[in-house]
Image (cartoon, rainbow, N blue to C red; front, top):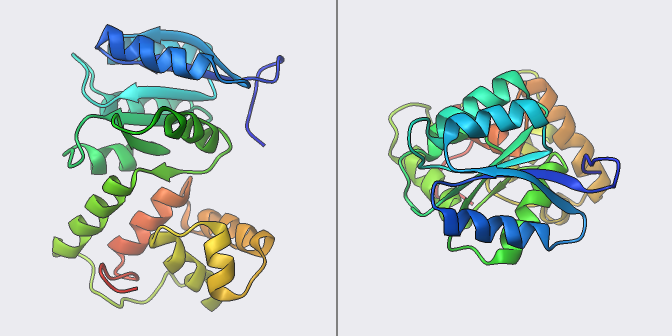
Length: 226
């Protein structure tokens, strides 16, 4: 269940250097039942202070802001307040900051062209402790590892994972949901959820995005192989 304040709402901060965009995102989120926008700002330094002072459940950050950008802000927030989940928004489908943002600990990455409901759903997803990537960002991630020299295809999985956990990790890296993995591997969704939790703990990563990166970096998953 997602973390909430005493009123039962998921607490959110919003940072974007464009006032109209910032106000629009805040208004969309504030209009949703169960979400409460507790503050908003227009730069990365202030976004970090807000996150550390207010400890929202989710900090929605623009990637490109003056001074401290969204990636650097994410790194500061997740280092000092790991309980705060960060959802990054960008106007660029092939943003060069994607990989740095994910490694900095972002739990979600969406394009600003996403439908409003998609942004609302993303906030709920990351608040619940899961991770979310825009499909265009997922393709970019896969393309990156297809071209990267590191990681030999077919490398052995981390020694601590069981064969079944390795199968689940491969499916996670391919962007499949728990329900899809359950159908693919003939497991119950609850069992898949348990496997994912164990995988995150064994790999010492915070969410599915980080686990997927680990799978590509080790060569366990090869881009283009289904």
